Length: 178
Image (cartoon, rainbow, N blue to C red; front, side, top):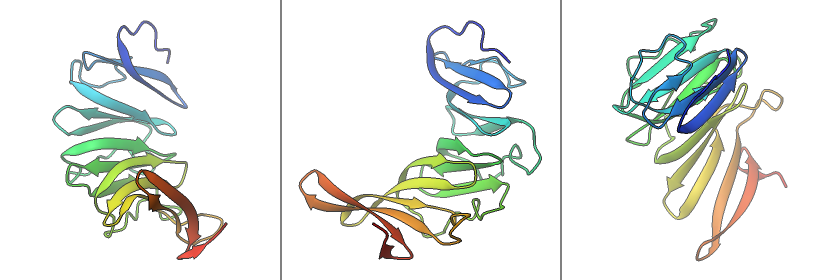
């Protein structure tokens, strides 16, 4: 579907079915079955589905639902951010915790319970990324699903070198990769 004319757009996304724009007034163009004027604040496109975050922290999903990716769990409340992968989704709650749903071919919806103080999220085709504020570290990025090729957990760790400077290191099961 074509975006058409979207005035005052604050965000755009795309999936297999087309492009979408979120206007400053919270309206999604095209609406693709969402309730008009739902006060959306963020949108993201997955493989063949679309997620929208309302100003009240609720999530709405539309599109193809082969693996439950548009069945938003009732526990997905108080969301601050959302991310859509190929056939799965990830939501960041206001308490810094995560919830994931949809396809789980590579463990991508097995968000670890130890993930806390998360401040940003992103999805790939079959994996998730998160940035977390941990004690003593400015940000720690972790791949929240096992790599399909490695079958292991891969982390991007940020270690403070001096004020405002961090050194980044990829680790596999706690061992430096590079």
